[in-house]
Image (cartoon, rainbow, N blue to C red):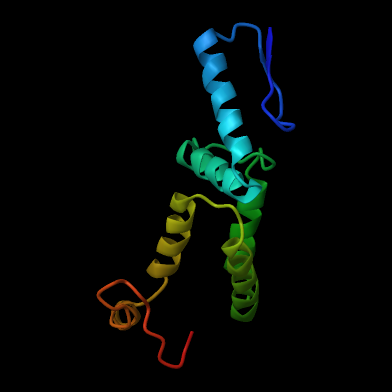
Length: 138
């Protein structure tokens, strides 16, 4: 059994039948992550995990109760609560280590919530370089 430890205090990985190629790849990955600042390393790991998700139960929510409870609450919550909690969640997600695909799913969900007229008005405020043109609102 080999124990893979990188510089710093990376978590150990043990495998009775870890092949040399796997060992080298894991060691190189741990060393590369150790060279990154913690925020970048977390973002890289979050993006990798998001890209390789199975769509099955989320860690910490093995029975799907968090998602189910959230959907039930959202179906019955008054609009002012949806706005308050939704805004707070989006503010928090701005600094969370989410992969690009997770951010795209959030954006797409928000985009679908707008009527066509509002989507067109929004797109009219994006210049040719993709920058948003602020005109009094945020």
